[in-house]
Length: 232
Image 1 (cartoon, rainbow, N blue to C red):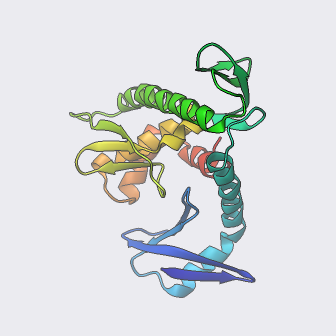
Image 2: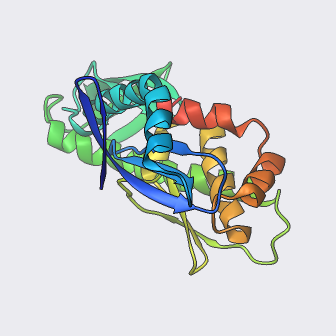
């Protein structure tokens, strides 16, 4: 693990050397940092690059700090805000004769047979609703994006929690998506799927990979920034 110090700020990052000409910095959902650089890039070049990216880096980290609190520390009671497909929805919990989650007039409504203050009960049903929606939406988006490629086989689609990635392509011919992507807008989901499908043809992030990515998803950089900076 490498270390970068800028004023009173200190960061640890993973350094990956590749056959490439430029440097890149990625902030992962768990706030870990990955720097990719050319094989012969020296420490001075890497430090200069990181200093230039410092303001952007802090914006990313600040977002993910807020996002982690928003996603993982919910009480699941009325008034809380939940992300779904790039939009914020206020949660409304109300008593009913059956348990049901639905979207109504810009609200995320949980009709519950238990007390409206029973966050544990609400969490179970709301998370189950998110899981169902992620399976349905990811399948729909995957089928549409896959049609843009001319591959002679279709990797199976899997959904799996990942701390450091939005998506992944395994050599065992699977495309894996992070379930948290259901919080993002559909163009962000499409970008992640496109990115991983490009890895079928090009394993590394070299010029050929980005040439293919540009052809399948023009202006993908703006969508990537939207995903990483504010999750739509």
